[in-house]
Image 1: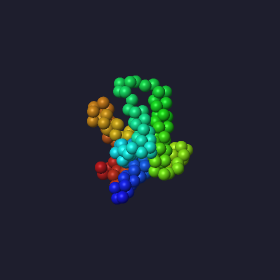
Image 2 (image 1 turned 90 degrees about the vertical axis):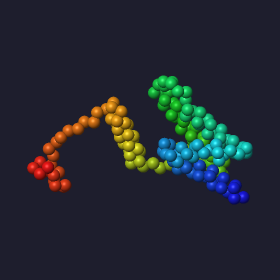
Image 3 (image 1 turned 60 degrees about the vertical axis):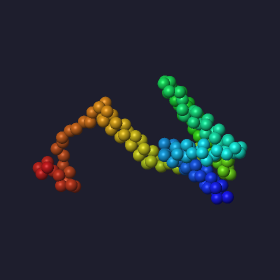
Image 4 (image 1 turned 135 degrees about the horizontal axis):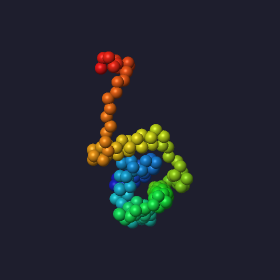
Length: 159
């Protein structure tokens, strides 16, 4: 009884992690939850099998053959298909755990403030630029300026 309760809790953690981070798919909990599906939905029942199948289809789509160059249109189509496959997985997970979510609720039912997306985009830019500087493919411009900063007590005369 205890083992079944624990398995149910692990399945709920997977579902809750995926649902709560569905707008931030690079979130570590989202990725961890996806990678635990094969372990915690390993049963031979119809619901577990449906979850694993939905996950395998998504994983297969997210792992295209290496070395292939794709056009912008192909990338856009692949991203749209990935959204549909993620929604299908979340719907299958919900059904397996007794929740009744529709596709619109899954797609549109999450909240992600603009500030979070701005912060993530800025951090991505900063990391990329820093890597370019460290790798020697970008220069770091440095200049000396005579500025006045009265709020911290620095003026051109006393610096």
